[in-house]
Image (cartoon, rainbow, N blue to C red; front, top):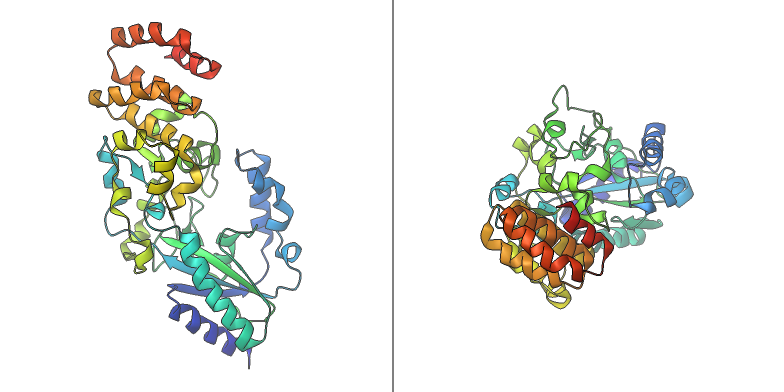
Length: 372
């Protein structure tokens, strides 16, 4: 059986498992992908994501990850929203959760399907396989472009002619030599909507991202206190940011997700900030069971909710922020101070500061009182 025949059988099996896009390429990355990764890390644009630097050599060279790999099967799972994801930004008493995290954790959804395809390949095609869904240092977007599924847009995310900005990616590396698909070409043209819409100017140039300025990074990956310069720009975004994805003109061809597990849960489409701020660890884990949000942890999540409360312009949420001044986490207490500085009249905030600052035992929180 030829590499083309193997490829088409695998494609059919992957589509039958429920994937929406399937492509094939050599298990190798071009020099540009390695150069882009090295430049990203050298500039410090990876921030707290030390795992990117720690695995740079294997991430940039699949042969170091698995020398026997000959081909990559790249799959895409459509998670397109049924409504405009930016509409949630107008509901300031509620939190905006990124589209990708509103349903079940996509890692679990895709891993199950990938295992089925990989097992079938191993048994039927007599080959060795390894599968990945963000579980190893694999540069999935360059592989997706090489396999014809889409191209990396100016916002550095994948864009598909068929699904717009809304594709989860997964990979199966195999010892089979499969006929490659034609790589996709860059179709961004002169458009720069994704760059111009960014609330924090996280793109120093087209096709370059400074993750340390990105709201997705700040709300998800960043473990410490969020710098004051970014807080107002975060608005009510409490987990991720969809702005650069949502404005892409190629979304005119997108369609809502067909996979039921990725449908948005009602409690995650527009959760009330007051309720989120009251979550303890147990209720956080219950609410976000089987959700990608769970990996964030309760303290960082409520930190984000406090910033959204400060941006809400809703004086009625001041009581919620004041209650958080007694939170066990300094991350939460500091942002509660900042929220109150924006919600309370100046004199009322000054009186509260006088009463509360002296009893605060965390230096960062005391500094927040002094700085507001």
